Amino acid sequence: MDRFTARLEERGALLFDGAMGTELWARGVPPDHCLEEVNLSDPSLVRAIHRDYIAAGADVIETNTFGANRFRLAEHYLEGRGREILEQGAKLAVEARNMSGRPVLVAGSVGPLGKPLEPIGAIKLSAAERIYGEIVESLAESGVDLLIFETFTSVGELELAVRVAREAAHQLPVVACMSLDDDADVGILRAVSGLGPAALGFNCGSGPQAALQIARRLHEAGLGPIAVIPNAGLPQRVSGRLVYAAGPRYFAESVEPLLQAGARVLGGCCGTRPEHISAMRAALDASRNAGDSIAPAVRVRRPKAESESNPPASRLAASLARGDFVISVELTPPRGVDPKRMLDGARLLKEAGVDYANVTDSAMARVRMGVITCSALVQQQVGLEAIAHFTTRDRNVMAIQSELIGAHALGIRNILCLRGDPPKAGDNAVGIWEVNSVGLINIVANLNRGLDANASPLGQPASFLIGAAVNPNARDIRREIGLLDRKVKAGAGFVVTQPIYELDAFERFLEAAGDLPIPLLVGVLPLISGRHAEYLDNEVPGITVPDAIKERIRAAGEQAAEVGVEIAVEFLDAARRWVRGAYVIPSHGRYDLAAVIVQRAREMVG
Image 1 (cartoon, rainbow, N blue to C red):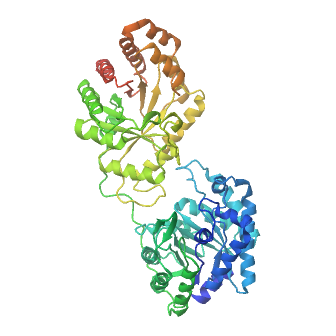
Image 2: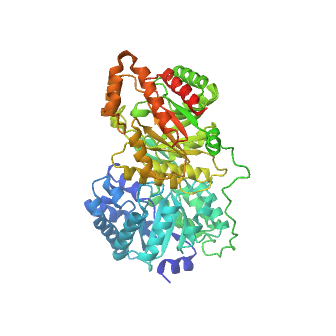
């Protein structure tokens, strides 16, 4: 039996240390400095903090290596020094333990990579396994007694990390902790529990009260031994620093209830200091429950994500399922606070026979009224069903999920998943792109299963129809088709193309793509002048206007807009045998031209 498990059985409960980052900041390390780098630049400071936690009564101290992976270190241009930082972090903790003369255990601290893994993010699982393997091996070779994986928000990533640890350093016990909401379904941890961690539970996220509720549910689910390492409440910013309200006495008062709830690994996370650990030590020593046996756990079944009655599918989904030829037209949200022009355009298009309205999401990275707001206005005030363009450019994973859940509540069911135009083309913003378009499709597909991005149950599933985009004009068409295949496999239910003008090029794309398993809507953008054609061909990524088309528009002179409509109708007439609909994109708010195309298209398809 390993020393951690033996001591846990012997003593009934073990106390981990408190926050390293909080202490480093309190002792002068700048907030924007890489905390793990302090292992190299000021080792005596890190060693002193370890010794203070030992003096406070911690049974286990954690190495200062939480963020020592190549992705987090790259933010500080330190990605090449990961192994050095890991080894030094373990060395300092071991030295502090040896200097104290106490039989304290050293836990190698490992945090999440900081970037989402596939299928939500772009980090391949094989790459994540390799990185975690390197971290685990470095810590194991440097003399840690156990590993603690902490502050994970993705159960899939935690499961991967623990599995790698069990394979790469099977001799080391593992404590696995997620940052959970107080109402989270702890059943998501069953897969991690099956890997045999020495303790499993919760850290960070909230304070002792919420931690108590989580501990009770973990115990009821039979997922012990249970680890509970809460924050010192929620922080507030005072004079440029984060200050946590929960003091040492409050933490000490939480020890007895946590033990009664089944917790056997205790400690402190963000905002806790040696004083908190000292108070918890005194309370733990005084508790009569610390060595008591725990009542048999009651296993509860994980609730199913499915609901009794799923929300109805969108009208677009029903039309595509019937094989209808659908027509949508793009609407551009306003730059300001007045949506009148957009709504008037939507009414004109509805009268012309448009089925659906594509609502853009700050296209060209220009600030405009939000896509969810505009989509709701179009549906509620005009009666056109919206296809909301939704980009990952401006949103992290949390914002993506929050907005999509809100969109569903507003009745928006059709989501076109896009990466978004780069901000350097727009209004002085910085792109986020925490996930790409494939990751976004996976997130929406998860919502349709009643799960969040981390596969935690949300209750009733959503009923989104998921759209994807493809560029038939792409220079590397094989790569584009490969990306489309990934989108389809992730859950896309229909696909729209970038505007295309050359029928031969479209045929070549279709031949290369093969039989698409989902409906295809072809993009049609009517040209309005020779300058417009040159602009699209030379300045807008993903659009190619053939020379013959440009010459035809130039020759039309004042009738260029009418000829542009004719070109669009001719292309649509030739392409309609291959597609299930048209996606018309009016330029410069010329909804009148789009209405003519819609009317002509309706005449073609009958």
